Amino acid sequence: MAESRVQHAANPPWMHPTMLHPAHERRLCRLDDVPDGGALALTDGADDLLLTRRGDAISAFRNVCPHAGQRLDWAPGKFLIRDGVLVCAAHGASFAALDGTCLGGPCRGDRLRAVALRVVAGEVLRLLE
Ligand code: FES
Image 1: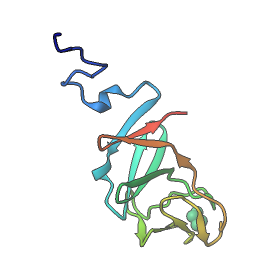
Image 2 (image 1 turned 30 degrees about the vertical axis):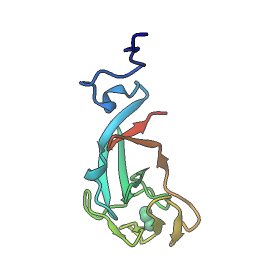
Image 3 (image 1 turned 45 degrees about the vertical axis):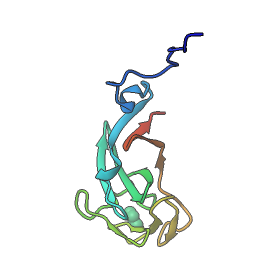
Image 4 (image 1 turned 60 degrees about the horizontal axis):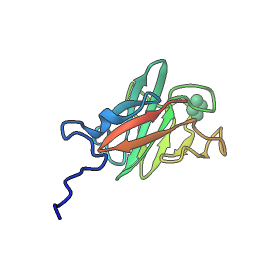
């Protein structure tokens, strides 16, 4: 009996995995673009976003503080972040960098507004609402 040479649902070898993301996803950056233990500011359409990362864990939020609606960075793309805590430059509210919970300050108990992501082959994709 002849050996089967049927290939099953494989993508063409020239097709990078990120080329497969459907219309409800949009590429934001590479995972490595976000400093490990730090944050990155991005503009995606009309949204100012901030991305935080620790190792392979990454999160994205609107760059809008729930206290008074100001940006969290003290200069564009410059964040006060250390040991997993992100501090709003306006009035000092502190947030858990990966889940966005306010840990202290004027909006304690509130949280940053999260943006859904997934990572495919090192590419960070935003899941559009
Ligand atoms: S606007 Fe962020 S703490 Fe006030």
